[in-house]
Image (cartoon, rainbow, N blue to C red):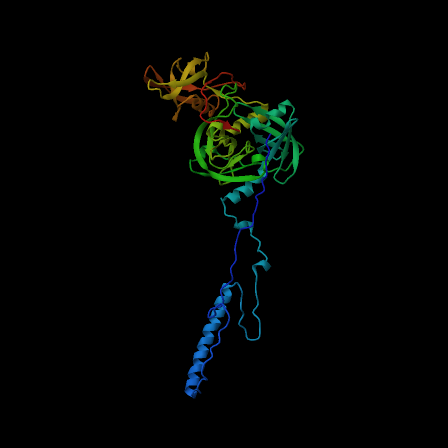
Amino acid sequence: MEETTRNRPTFEPSNATTSPLPPPFGYSYGEPTLSLGPTPTPRTKEHSLRKRGAAAIAAAVLAAGLVGGGAGAATTWYLTRGDRAQVSSSLDDTPSARSASRVPAGSVQDVANKVLPSVVSITIATPRGNGNGSGVILSSDGLILTNNHVVESAQRGAQLGVTFNDGTSAPARIVGLDPVTDLAVIRAEGVSGLKPAELGRSSELSVGQPVVAIGSPLGLSGTVTSGIVSALNRPVRTDDSPTDQYNTVIDAIQTDAAINPGNSGGALVDMSGQIVGINTAIATLGASMGGQSGSIGVGFAIPIDQARPIAKQLIETGRAEHAQLGVSVSQAVVGSGVTEGAQIQSLTPNGAAEKAGLQRGDVITKVDDRLVPDPDALIAAVRSHRPGDTVRLTYVRNGRTHTTTATLGSDGGQAPQGEEQQEEELPFPWSR
């Protein structure tokens, strides 16, 4: 259950002090002074002309001083000849309508306009309270892709509800769950005419590419954040413990677009408005490192190329099968104490690894061109493929490096228990 606390900011009056404005140019503070002296002598005509000329100049200077000084005092003086100047105010202006065509193509605003109608907020109601997540519309009649961990409690009596971008809502039911990939498909009931999201290709992503995250963090539906692709093929364990029976390790897209609890199941979108990932997890520092539980700029999404076939299987059969190498592995430790690779502890009889000639004690260091520094990296690399795919494995045996090819098997749609497990704790907890 997630709750939001709204803290209203307090605005206190500033301790501003005021001082009198300075007088207009040419004047001074204080009482006027009077000079009592001898009676002035008469002036000649020429002198008078000079006097009047000097007076005119002084008057001009004084007028300029009044305008300047008046402006400094926030008072406008109008020098007119019997008519008053018309005053315009920005408060009286009516803003001109902004045309939708003025939204720059490929901007965050453009992406939001396109994708927001295809992202939903999911509510999970239980006797203990409500939780929330996000989802991506797959079909006009209500099929929605989300995370398994968002909706799995509906198997135990929780009620699912979906709220669309226009504010309407509908009840929902589970179509299929896959805890291995942390994906699920639900159906909003009694709806039609929805806008399905456009699915892209995560294989075409590059590090540094801009992306947008859309979802309902902390129940705040329709939230849009932006960032970049920080890394690709990042192995991330998202189950609740390192010994979880499903070994939920995703081959994730890492992004610094803000992702928070409640974003799970929402969309990671490229700048053409195509879905490239399903937001799933964030990294948190944990209590020993400050305990920050919100976004720290390290979020993870399931690549859409991996989510698409799983979703299709869940819709068709309610379950999904996954590629298997047929090994149980642990972290390899070399003589210097440096950990590198996944060491085989046991092999499934007649499995893909055994058929490829691998043996107990071999240390797998690469799958195709991908480095395998640890067991999670091996799991993620294998699950990025489909059953029947052929992969090239690099491994070390007795200090010598070898390569072989393996045709990946299938778990038959059954969640593996013990397959390719490891017992190492992660340096950071992955929060969903």
